[in-house]
Length: 585
Ligand code: HEM
Image 1: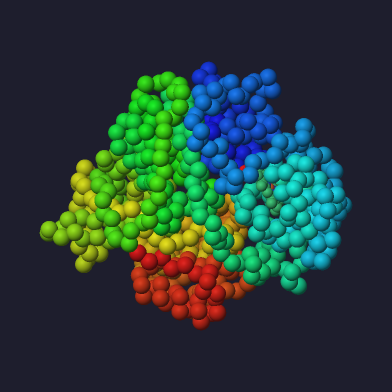
Image 2 (image 1 turned 30 degrees about the vertical axis):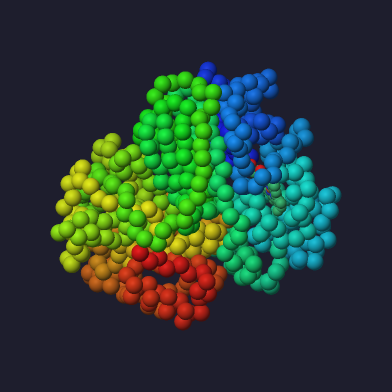
């Protein structure tokens, strides 16, 4: 897969650590960076290119004048912002020659004892940590592990002074505030000294798992939700090739943006970026016309980066992207059922449920934040009937059969037909091409709350599985504070009611961190799994520390009575309800 050099940077350095990249200069003056592993976070940028330190990471030919190569993009108007992956106005530092990421990897592989411990792992208490707080002797704790960062100083893309801010102490919060996605575990693997001893006991470590000190889950500071009071101001950047234009909007890591895109006419694009209940509206008047639908749209719930590529009607390098304005709005409390969607597919999924695939018309498309739902409405007997649904990732659904169905900008819903459900019955009868009304995304789920948690349980009943599927997808991909265990407890009546069983079982086989636990209340004699309804015995393992079943965060979705029962049981088990999210729709 090719990624194109863009006008602002995401997490260039550390992604290069995981996937070696080579850059080829294309005839149209852009740089294609070919990677051996596709990753949506791994697009390099003009600011990377203009930054000598990142240049060395990218292995660009040293004779190439990057400024000239990217001349058309550089002639952009003043308001073009080179941005920062951190959403932070500070720039990365130019590193001294011989201090690129590759040089750091080489040093790590050289056999030099970067930790200065001769391979011995020693628990460190905070007094000891505090004594190593100088440029020449610098230790730092992140998520319960102490690292010797002395040798990393000159390799740190943020500079020595920045790194020194975290030295001699637990720098978890500071690190997360700046760049929680940076894979420090890999970067500092040779600098590990030992666990930070804040509590006396360590968790027992199941075979094949990374050791995680119990302190990670017990230290109140790391268990608190990561919240920032500062307002998120999305930044804009762009890059072009002769054939297409790519627009980037940078929000903030884990701020879980949603996107509503409209092409108002061939030269006018509107991007509404939803962050919690605020909408940031970017109106673009492009230099020339572009096609619809867009070539690609990506919304990174973890990176907070939105990337939109549109195809130019007439291939040419433009002197500028055009112009844009930004305004802000607050999402209304009302059900803004203003988006018309047409049915692309409506087929049975199992004995009482179906898949409804919808596509925006009027040149509109929407990407929901993880954990959000939307309202679907239809006119039935002269009355607008509505219900909340959460679209599910296509990978959990049967393979699409036509190009129309496989379009990545479609919204796919899994819907249960209730005998008394007027809307679900009505929706099941929908034919291809018929219209429905959709709202903007709604929800109160904050993805950042999950960041400190590496053992998470999702408890769903019936169609309450749908938001969990998005969470499963997000959490297993999460780079910042990678998940150790993700357990999905899925309650149904019979085995025929279990949604996406094959896909979830497959996921369990391919990712050992994920565990699916089906519980049936009316199972037939052949069922060998768990039986019963939600009860204290079934949830008790979640609060038993030092087991894979333990969860420091729980999300619940199901009928109201189910969610209430889950909450009551967790409360009885003395689970900290601050670490519980109940999806309501
Ligand atoms: C805790 C103290 C630290 C502070 C205050 C800090 C600060 C910064 C700053 C200000 C930047 C520039 C970000 C920007 O462009 O806006 C940066 C970049 C970076 N830092 Fe740190 N840093 C810290 C610790 C670390 C550690 C421990 C590592 C890894 C071992 C690390 C790895 C990186 C990397 C890879 C980048 C480049 C990120 C990118 O390209 O997006 N930093 N840091």
